[in-house]
Length: 392
Image 1 (spheres, rainbow, N blue to C red):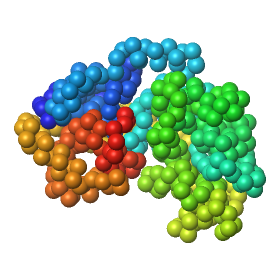
Image 2: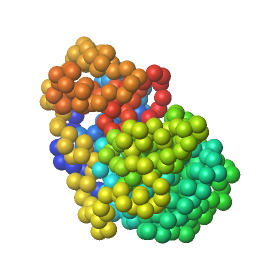
Image 3: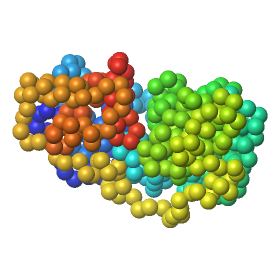
Image 4: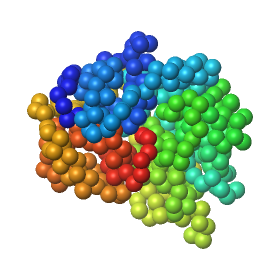
């Protein structure tokens, strides 16, 4: 955002009309617009439609030629698919939207939901673990899920093979939430088709991805941040030293959630991740009672929804600088930022400090680079240089 724009310092109004929700969805589906960029654009331009009108010029100023926003035909097709799947579009300002998730700076602005939204009002605990879990690990996952559900918790997981499947199955009667890497109407793995149907009848399937989208490798870490962000605690049952479950645990730590782990035998590679988490400070748990004891207090009253309920980064963003920057100045700033970033995630606050820049100068430049695909955002306010071009 290197040019003067129709900016607004007022938080956006909730998308209460169908036209406004349509604009939100179209903005979110536009190329290079991820959750953080969405919140920045909404804060700067005051509405999704204003942001859509401004995006081509914003992209041109960032050196991107021929940028086009998401075509209306794509949004129409997604809405048609949602009707066929009986999916509801859940907005971050809706009262049913998970309060803990809404407080994150990279919270999904919109989620597709299939099933019973009432389960979102319960305190949520995530159970994650190995896809090739041992018999003992599966037994532990079932026991934890059943007992946590009976205690009033909603069990959250990713509907993968192994621990995820066992946790969902054991919590079907009490309510379980499956957060999916693909569309909410896409069953993955295919062997969980019956489980997916059962979850939609007594629990909930959630996804930030378009309806009908098959999960891609880069979508699973995004899915994991939602699992971590919406839960009061993340319990890792079994996990290898390098696994998606540890990514979820890391996200939970970044978000200030409790991370709990089930210990395992030192010779079992499937327990090496859990044992390392415990060594590094995660709470060792033996049963559901240990989990319940570690949970922070839960307020059963739903939080009032207003524009102030948006992620803090949205409401607190300063207005863009009034002066125009030359192309040479913009290019130099972009190169400074890229020179400070690498494939290892770096906190945005560290970047501010290292470059000695005010936030109102850095924020538009980061948006330019994200639209260009030169940088990637990670959970917890981290940035990294993109190794290859990929859509957000």
